[in-house]
Length: 71
Image (cartoon, rainbow, N blue to C red):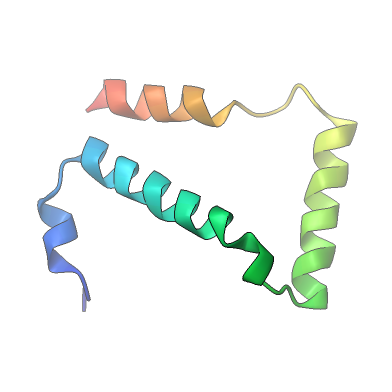
């Protein structure tokens, strides 16, 4: 069951914007976020993988722009 049914009435662009705003609000409060050892290990693994292959992947702005253009 969807706890926030109004979200589905938003366009794809509006939902992406909502997710970005939610994420920004979480990032702003990141000092209060505690990670488990397993989560920290996974983040370290991902950082190491990115450092080993810096050309892999796409910038977030590019991904969002592509999604918005597809709508």
